[in-house]
Amino acid sequence: MTYTPAIPTGGYAGWLILNRTMAKQEAAFVQTAAYQRNEDYFREKIGSITSAEELVADRRLLAVALGAFGLDDDINSKAFIRKVLAEGTQASDSLANRLSDKSYFKLAEAFGFGDYETPRTAEAGFADGILEKYKNRQFEVAVGEVNESFRFALTAQRDLPEIAAKSSSNNTKWYQIIGSSPLASFMQTALGLPTAVSSLDVDRQLEIYQQKAKTLFGTDDLAAIVSADGMDKLIKSYLVRTQLTEGTSATGQSAALQILQGTSTNLLSLLL
View 1 (tube, rainbow, N blue to C red):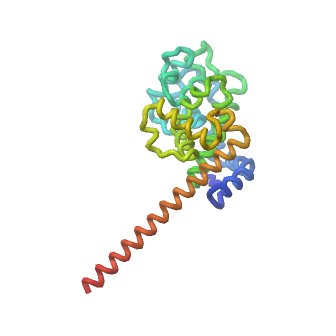
View 2 (cartoon, one colour):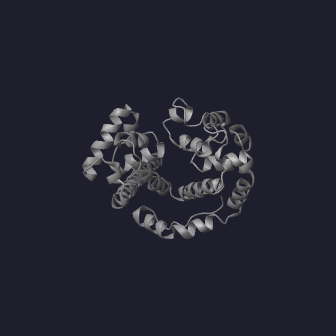
View 3 (cartoon, rainbow, N blue to C red):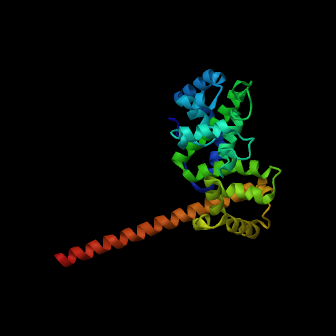
């Protein structure tokens, strides 16, 4: 994509600006030639695709399909994606059900190749639904090229309320966050947890996440945490902590540079 989002500043102030201008920026984004070519091609061809094999064989269609679910990096993993799609989601032992990252489950569920005699690609409105997801995800990618922390925040703003609204148990919802690399990274930062927590046993991770959430929010109930006010508090915490970390890193680098420069000066004076 050739569109570069206008993000004049970082941190929470920049986030507020991005949200205020989001609708206009997304509208400009979808008017780019590259995006229009992808959309037109997908609309024209997807209705004729009846199997996982056919979808994987068409790289342009596959790029949109994967891009709609944040799986762009899997574009060359054709055998893996074919298996995810072909096995569907209804069998408990299907690959999509066994993978911790539920983006693959959503992909397989959306296309329905392994679940129904007639896949969903021929349904009215199918292309519209996939392209809406594709637009949102690809705009996030464009935002991330300017400010990576904003991309993580956008992902969390979209996905966390969806997870929280599910009828599954609160623990299951937390496990889904832990199993998603971008959401886990976002939540670790927002809660002030070290990245090393991800190397622990998953049940221990759950305890740590929930304990920290209770400390900061007074509850570990995900639905309460990602309510309208709670979500804003969570994103603000994430962006402030990210900015502090970046500031500390920059300060450290500046101090190191000064030391190195001073050392070089001293060495030069000794040599002279």
